[in-house]
Image (cartoon, rainbow, N blue to C red; front, side, top):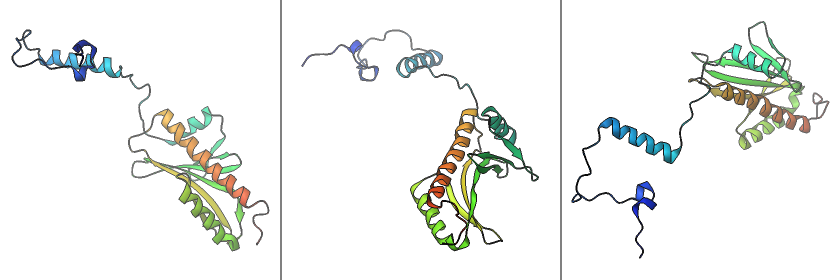
Length: 196
């Protein structure tokens, strides 16, 4: 068996000095040990880069700024809720919770379905929800008996979000909602409001 010199081994496999070996010098101080460990970790793992952006609370103003930065049209309704159109579908952006920490992106399909199709639309929503994480799909029956199909992505942002995280969440809510509505469009070409 060929002996391997310690300097060619990874640091974690190097032999420890035996208790019989003479001491190499005075014991290092805590500060010196800390500096040695920091250098060792930097060499082995790389230097950590400081974050360019820190998580901040999500506000309607940040969502509106994101919409403006991405050249999306948006509005604020009479109730103060922020909404916009995405690929012809209406989406709202809500903040719920005691500290407005839960972001919800809720979309509504641009057409209504007849109440007689309720069971089959519920089955479609259940299939979607069983196969995918986003968006949550469900229906609402209005007072006039028409069925509205809804998508929803909700995220708890108790510790805030960076601009990049917020952008990803907003795109996720809009794009997955649109994918769901595209699937509904394929299943129910116009006129979807007619009785089967």
